[in-house]
Length: 81
Image 1 (cartoon, rainbow, N blue to C red):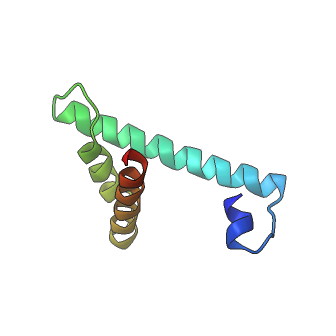
Image 2: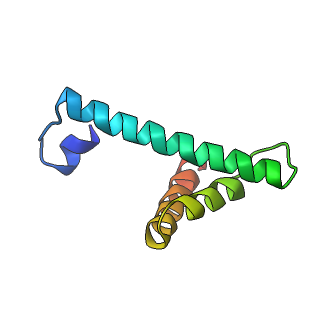
């Protein structure tokens, strides 16, 4: 749905969609593993937003991680309102 809105009705093949889905799943797994590692390192039992933000900063290049954190924060604000 997002691709259709952004690209004026163009679509993606099922194979392309599968690749994008695998990429997103891999990124999510890496982020969660790093965030849980940080949680254990701090001897905490609860995963919190700062752990996810730090994991993002560690796994992505500086410009990309900063932008990702801003977009995620905006989405969270919009969702909680």
